[in-house]
Image 1 (cartoon, rainbow, N blue to C red):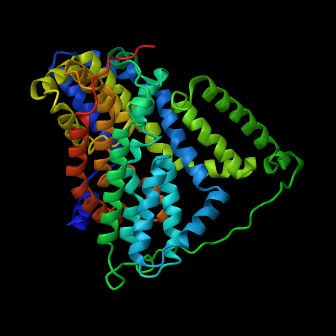
Image 2 (image 1 turned 180 degrees about the vertical axis):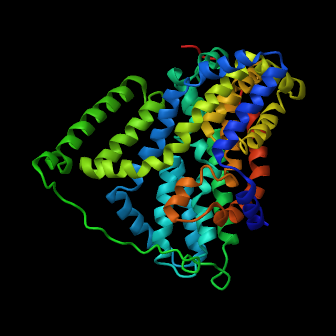
Length: 453
């Protein structure tokens, strides 16, 4: 059933950019029906189009820094050692699932590249592993718990005043990370979903006689070593192959991070800019020379094209939404069908469904946040928990939407349909569990007034 659905979606689903563009058109039409003129809608769209440029760059750097760290020589050697551990196909697939989930808590960009390299190394060591099941296992972090970790777009955005659109800030203020991802409730969701995901990956893994291996699919994961250039051919290239500049830059970077943590504390210091800055410094250090670092950055650039071109569309949607009065309509709608008890569940279902059409954790939150947080405030529901409801449920449609699969597909040289069957199997189990968790844990989160600083 999963493979049939994947083939259908590959044939009929347009590119992720088309989903975002369609959302702009739909919101614009609704705004016109609500009385806005075409000129007003166009002005709303264009005026806000560039509002998310800082946030867009921050999201692009999450991908770049994750890629840079994962492809560094020390991390690659670590992956090679880890790949020697599993000895059977089922254990290998569960093993990949575990590391995909754990690394996604550090960075979703890092997780995809790390998992892709790990899959290729294990494929060269363990015979009879189904490449489709292992690829789906490598994607699990993005479909389960990544948004509950340190690279959570919504949580980082709400903790960073400079990244929050002014209209949204007036509703929510800032929401510190200590109230979102650094809570025991969030830890419960992480543990439950991790155990569930690994169990499904293990029990659903085909035996050797039924497995379709990478070799059967015509995939060659054998390493082709290319000689590494150790020094420049010209005097002008000397600094490119010397670690001197790297050492100085990293020293300055760590002085800044140490000072910031000393002033604010480790949790308050973790905002989008500092998070990316830390990963960037680690990437510089791991690659050691500017030339190795720049080569890795160049290889990461294709993976950020979707973010760069789509996020301005989400900002345009936000502008139309806020100025047309549609935001107020949606707030009233959610208030009419929700109570303090049911709102976390209803908002979770809504976020999951919308994720099929707007496959972007941060960009989609910008669209949803105004009316979800306003409704939460009216119903005396903890707004920080609504951020976490969003984080847990918006990951669900990633299991069947190819947008976030792209970096992993590129590393493995496969198509979305190859892993969609097993990822849909995970989705079937995850949906009821996630919805139950966001509902039952909401009862432990008291309402907290907005923080304006």
